[in-house]
Amino acid sequence: MEKVFGMISLGCDKNRVDGERLLGEIERHGCRITDDIAEAQVLIVNTCAFLNAAREESIAAILEGNGYRAGGKLEKIVVTGCLPEKFIGELFPALTEGDVFLGVKDASALFPALERSYREGRVNAVGTGDGKLYGRLVSTMPHLKYLKIADGCFNRCTYCLIPKIRGKYVSYPMEELVEEARGLGETEELVLVAQDTTRYGEDLGQNQFVKLIKKLSELDNICHIRLLYCYPEVITDDLIREVRENPKVIKYLDIPLQHCEDRILKLMGRRSRKEEIRALLTKLRREIPALAIRTTFIAGFPSETEEEHEALLAFLDEAQFDNCGFFAYSREEDTRAYKLPGQIPAAVKKRRVKALYRRQAEISAKKLANYVGKELDIVCDGIDYEKSCFVGRAYFQAYEIDGNTYFTSPEAEEGKTYRVHIDRAQTYDLFGHTVEE
Image 1 (cartoon, rainbow, N blue to C red):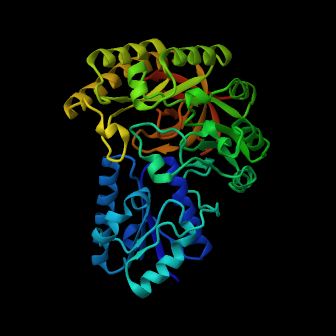
Image 2 (image 1 turned 135 degrees about the horizontal axis):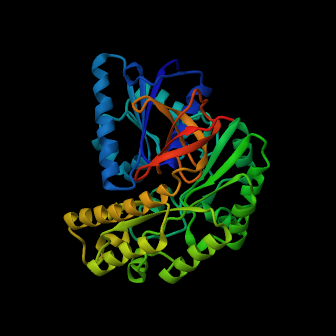
Image 3 (image 1 turned 30 degrees about the vertical axis):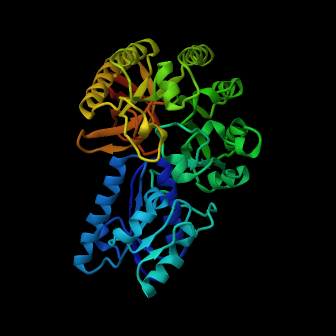
């Protein structure tokens, strides 16, 4: 099959890795990949289905992609990822724009399904792949790569579809992950991702997250490791010690909390409670004083009162997180929270999200203002042509989810680290210039 492939990948960084495995299959078969969708003969749409808004975005991308058939080059659309994995029963008869449907672990089935589609027409190949970790074609900047260490989820949060889409938690074999990381080449920042990274190995009988970090740290091609999606109740003393003492581990933890009030946390199916969260934050900052902490919260969960919303605002003031994301609760069928009484009107949820963002913006602006006049090590991610300067990140700025540091310099190379004097700060971003040696 000598076709030109294009891809639209939506959703989270875990989904991005799945898309990169599909790109690896295409490369392995010797086919050309284009960034110009108009040139593609086969278009892969890697979908997200976590929320209704994500499903709508995925369907819109498929319909928009279908418009390229009129130009005569586009022959097939492959719909893959979470959307067909969960909703194939509805999609296959109805979404006639799709020619091939694949699930989240079906990279190996891409070419057999395509060849069948060229012979027979529309093909439902969901669940026909072998799920193995074949080679990837990295789609991020050369110096920053993701490593997906597990799939599925143990946590049965009442609002979340992930276990229904991706199944139970499955850790990828450690030796395969180490080989995959070694094969990624020179990497300034390796970002570990999973639905819950901290539970790595528990499905095999024993938590091995710290052991995996140590193994990856031994690789000469890996300079630094960033940890995302660390659930609070599994942040052990061993993990804290590893983050503190391992020079390759970035002093940054992403800890999804979702709320601070015990009644709401219980309704959400979360295992931590407010005092436990407080104790953890205190311990982390005592043991790792320079640690940057990022988290996420859900606003407008069913029956959330104005008092509980105000308590969450107050908790932001108390906790002083470095970075936060806020989301309005999305009512998803096939979740336990869907049937909970006291569903909050959309306008109220929107108002509460805005209030949370305003409060965190004040906190973030004050924290960043403390860096003005100081020097920071900044990894260069490239050039921002609109701002006519280089753009990069400090250790407390994760790629695409936190702010950036913009700096001027006679010259700078992508992936290299520079000492930057901070001249000014905004709500989420820093601005400065390189310090001449």
